[in-house]
Amino acid sequence: MSQRYVRFNVNELARLAAEAVGAKICVSVEKYPDGMYNKAMLLTMDNGTQVVAKFHIHMLAGLILLLQAKLQQWISVFAWSSTAQENSVGAEYIIMEKVPGIELERVWPRMKIAERFTLVKAIAGFQKAWTSVAFKKFGSLYYAKDLEERTGNEPLYIDANGVDITDAKFAIGPSTGRELK
Image 1: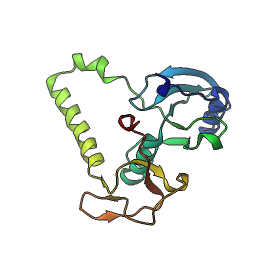
Image 2: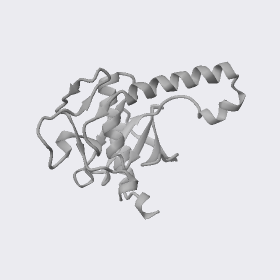
Image 3: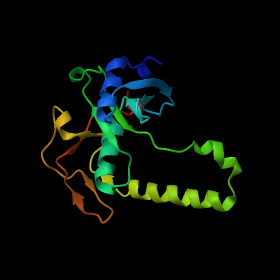
Image 4: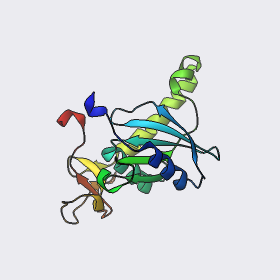
C-alpha cells in the first residue's frame, strides 16, 4: 500500500490546473477512481471546467503524448511534469481533459446485443491503432528531455508499415511497471 501513496501539494496542483485551463480558481478537488498505475483526482474550476490529475504517471504521460501526436484522436493534456523535485506540486503529475460520459458498467446491462457489438468493434479499432506501434526497447515512454541518460537518435518504434520511426521528442527510459519493483 505504501507504494501507492503519493505526497503532493494539493493547493499548488489546484492553482496549476486552473491556470492550465484559463480558469480563475479551482473550487473543488475530489478523489477519482485510480488506474492500475496511478492515483487520480477530479478538479472542478470556477468556470465549470473539469480536469483529471493523475500521479505516478511516467508511462501514462509519455504514451498519451505520443499517441496524441501520432493519432490525433486522444484527450487533451493541459500540463504535466515528470520531475517531482523540480515542480511546485512536489510529485510527478499530469493534468488532462475529463472525458465526458458515464461509466460503461452503468449502461452495459441495458444495452442491446447490436449496440454492444458496435461498441466492442469501436474499442477494438482503438486497440488496433494503439498496438500498431512496436517499440524498439523495453521500458517506459518519456519526453527525451526528462531523462538524464539517453542513447543517441536511434529509432523509437516501428510503425504499422514496418518503418523505423525516429522521434527526438520521446525516449524509452526506466520501466515504471509494478511487476519489476
